[in-house]
Image (tube, rainbow, N blue to C red):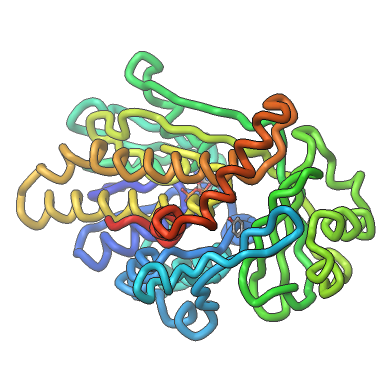
Length: 390
Ligand code: APR
Ligand code: PHB
């Protein structure tokens, strides 16, 4: 088998890259370790930057997003027992975010790829990358007891944090930067109406909490928990009681609870790999970086990488220019590090860090107090949350 671009991973990064390359007339095959159902079973954040919505629309998968996505023009920050609103649209001349589950983004991208008759190899085992530092790269895998090989011009490593792509790069060629936070997020999904029409990020002495949603009838809530917390140690009632304890009285009173349809604990980490290009291998999305979910940047940052990589590869095939390819890593990393900073800042401001003591707690309150006494500070938060320009 041969193609122009071999994409490893059929998550949002790989699927969006495949779609943008297809629209640019560049041939790509996606090799995915899991089944389509497994890929769709992942529960992930769904706050889309305006740029992400524009990219998905450009990719031809913006229809359902436009019909079902929830436009949010602001969100609340709650601390010291009160909720105060960050008016994104008022601060940024009408710009906003859209709430639309990542699973739905992935589903629409999968359906568009299938409708275009493009090749995706699911349930590919023992995926291996070959000769990407030379001029004849290839990807091999096993399926049905047979090992198959795909020759290509380029490999796009879109296989996430635990994938084979970054792991195939010699350690001496890679520099990584990592911060593991001393806590996790215990999340619950329930078919109950959200407690508010917008998101509420809560800084509380018991720990961080987040009130989010998937639709007008499906809510997503999180509470900061111990790094080794087990979801099975939390009954639904225990979760709802803890969430109420972190909310202001009026919001706690308004909370509609119900049986959980999913409950899980997620660790929080910041991670970046540098550089993002190794010969004919490029890293994009979670294969290249991880952000704590506080700033809702994971999917949006992946979309930025994919936009740059799709432009670069399309330029190579369309105009015979390698300027985009040569500049991809530096261009993507400039945006990645700003999103890492914002996600770290939001996480540091809103979570409980016992090890930083009373002084650390006062710094957090001062940060929040400054936010609500300075329009410049709120504008800085808003432009990072809605998404910096590409
Ligand atoms: N071979 C083939 N596929 C692989 C391999 C491998 N060795 N390892 C992992 N994969 C697949 C995974 O099964 C997954 O479907 O690569 C895909 C990677 O998808 P994601 O982890 O979702 O990463 P990405 O597409 O970059 O999307 C980033 O997902 O994790 C969230 O918060 C993150 O919202 C962000 C988004
Ligand atoms: C979510 O809805 O899962 C969500 C929303 C906003 C975040 C993180 C997660 O910052």
